[in-house]
Amino acid sequence: ARPALWARFESWAQLPENALAGPAAPEKLILPLAEAARVPEAYRPRTILELPRAMFGPVEADTIRRVAAAAGQGFAGFEANNIAHLRICRGLPLTGGLGLNLTNPLAAQVYADLGLSALLILPEVKDSEMACIAPARGGRPVPTGALVYGHMPLMLTRACPLHNLHGCAGCPRQGVLTDRKAKKFPLRCGGGVRTIYNPVPLYMGDKPGALPVDYGVAYFTLESREEAAAVLGRIAAGQAFEGDFTRGLYYKGTM
Image (tube, rainbow, N blue to C red):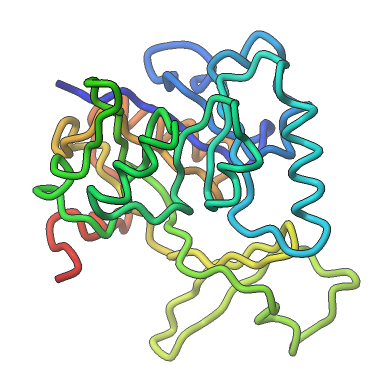
């Protein structure tokens, strides 16, 4: 069976029209917690709010405040990306995101026992091993998901790699790192941390049902609204990706 499609966006402004309605529309939308106030009430029942992977300094208190403000506002729930989020969101609907680094059945079962209602498996896990990770709670399976599109976040740093070039004043909060092979890695700054992304996106949209999971996540970060619309359309149609892409480690694994 073809897995359900969920889609994660960097901001509400990034959402294209086909993410809200039509054959390409995802079953669930995932948005950063800071975007909660921008989500129209009509779309909140299918929107999960993503908590920040790292919470340095005042970010933790701000996250706690934002969760309290969003609770009871009609959202589908929250996404944990750090084990501290289980405490912050205690008693609230909670799923597990990329930041939990889920790669094995023991961890998956622990998270399921702690109340998480869905769990995203890392792309480092081989396709043949994914079915073994799926946990259960109360005799019922807990849904698992996998990325089907996205520029993978490769590294999270507190120190800014671009600081030697310029200070924070006037910085556009984004840049590019070039490695010794001239590969250019996009960098984005926010929430007190910097995220470095793979320049080549993962794509599995032309292989629906190839991964033994309940839902696939299109993980939008660097894309324009128009680019996100095109990717959603291709996933819905099961079409091949245009341009360079990777299958992650779904067919190779890490061992």
